[in-house]
Length: 116
Image 1 (cartoon, rainbow, N blue to C red):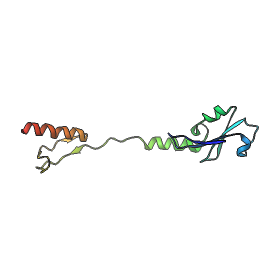
Image 2: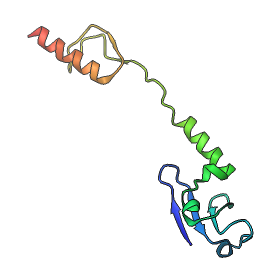
Image 3: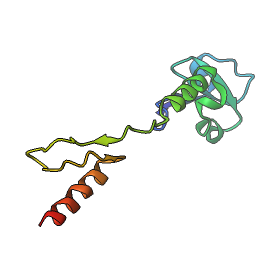
Image 4: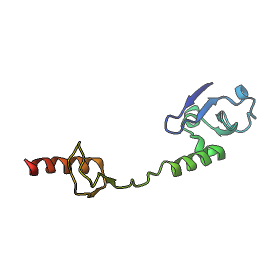
């Protein structure tokens, strides 16, 4: 019997013989037990039990994986704006909008070259 953690999802799964986890031995020779939700999946071999992921048999893991996937969708960021009034740091007065800080930095670099 051994427990492993799936790095991508954080699931804790135990692979064992059914009698080691007090499961019905008639279901198969090996079981995968979701430690978080106490759900069991049977397998014919230890290898098959090892490669069983929680989302494949556990409703709790499947729901958690779907909610994590929705939460990890990145939203577009707002445009970065620098001051339209003279600034002691950059001296720029154009008031243009930039989608990224790197574009803003490039703008300051070109403004410095133009003024030189």
